[in-house]
Image (cartoon, rainbow, N blue to C red; front, side):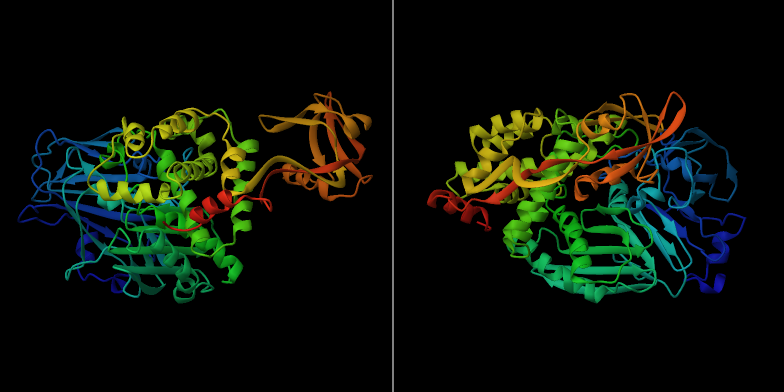
Length: 600
């Protein structure tokens, strides 16, 4: 209903006749209308334009956005794209491709209007957009990301713009942006708009001060289980640890955490001065809060990189044709390492928990990823289907590699300078407006540290040599064992190999108890112990059974379905990829560990 909206001019905005514009604005002026009572699936966008040149005839929507590493093709969500001259007369437009519309008379175009659907509930054939990177409009809230709403005329990506939002009067807006007296958000350019998410609706909020920085937290919780003040209380120690890790002052003056808690879970997306989270709604307990804090620690560290340390590929982002960066290991791998290390050094987690986290990351790298796929290759191919299949390992192998780089730097400097310290130097030397060299960064990093670091980059970032976990962690008195027999007997299926082919799973190896039960290579696996879905999870639970237990397997051979009874065998339990503190660590090892455990 019109009465629910902030602007009394809404009726004029939604009228079918275009208003007459007396004077062209000096900047791109966007107005976004949200009327969830009338249409909860789409946004109405109006753009008032400055004078366009004839070579600015293409209106571009984003193919992707920084930090997402996925194809978005926002033009898929656009409908009713229209252009008008200064007198409100419609001008011809033509869609050239998924993300581009051509203006027939750019020099006469004063206004553009279009409808753009929210991404959460709009079905697409491929490339579904991560929820935290998309848009949502519901009866009591909305989540906005710049690239899901706005495009720009060709050649105007770097022009200033302003945005006004029309939304129900009982809603609250949460963002790092601050509107002016007329309700406009002013932004430096299109990149800034994409970098500034906004959450609106029935929100709670909380604020704190970290050194020179004002930090805000805005929270939408579907059933009010999560409130901003208690959540910020759980996050405070992490924020304090981050402040110490940053050297006492944050590299930003303002920061905002935007939280969406409901029945949908997706993850988080970092921005230069804010981060947004789409997480499952659960009552806050120390355990559930720690999971939220761990995610926030990662996203918060992005104020270091890529905000203050990034190459020209991010500095001048290509929204038309995305380009991967070889330094994804820096933006995501180093950030993931720092998110855990700053909590360890801040006393939030004990050393044994940190070592358990290392175990989890090595397990992922060795069992779920291609260990021959280098971090450089992953970064360069991050927008491709091939790269996406390996992408999760940037948070695993990438973080492990950053941890080894930290240890190597500490070793070479006699415990006086680690990765944190080099990152602080880089942030000071470069900052938000001076990019590192995409081509020469490895060499530049090596010059400001030690010659040996060049060899490290060559072997473990540019190439994918096995990580020297045992060698490096032994320097701080930590043992790493690829395999550690426990002496305990556990259940086993014996040698087993499975291969997915289209929608089915087939045995490629069947030995021991499986062979004894009559299962053969080439048999199709249909069910285990009554479960026809989540078979992988059922297999992982086999070692928790008692040896000798009989488990029914349903297989298909030559088109005939049959049930086979498999009697579980017995084998010695072997724990893999184990990190433990060495009780026989030498004074030299303990001295380097002490340097490793504190911010220098």
